[in-house]
Amino acid sequence: MKKALVLVVSVMLMTVALGACQAAPAGPQIEVSGVWGRPSPMTAGNGAAYMLIENTGSEDDKVIGAWSDVAENTEIHDMTMDDGVMKMFHVDSYDVPAGGSVELKPGGKHVMFIGLYDQLEVGQVVTVELEFEKSEKMTVEAEIREE
Image (cartoon, rainbow, N blue to C red):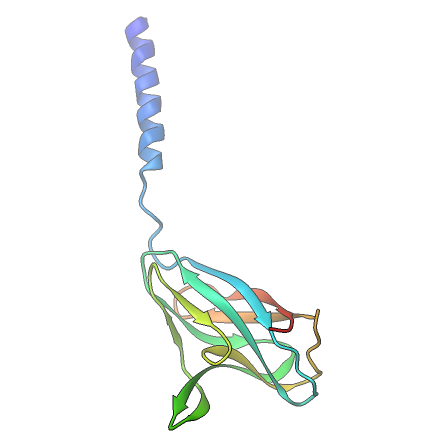
């Protein structure tokens, strides 16, 4: 009887230990944090949202698009310095490497709201949907605030 009890307890402990040793889930694991946007003083103007997109998974992913109901069009953009002039341009995607991140920040990568339906005011919360190459679409909320 004692041997049977020891065997049962040993099997249970081994099962728990093996369960704790499982590898991280395959594929990308996307987390978004620090989402915010700047106030925009006029209607029919443009606005932007910024955030940190992290991939804690084992596979690379890409941001391939964005959508929001605050503007006629929502795109992913980047900026670069060219001969002393800052230039902004639409991009097809942002790489989000496995175990890495991509930061969207003023003066660099950002979600661009083109043709705002109304001005963006401090304290307002804007919904942004991010589309990924591999991961499911993700909806985040950007608080409009001064930098």
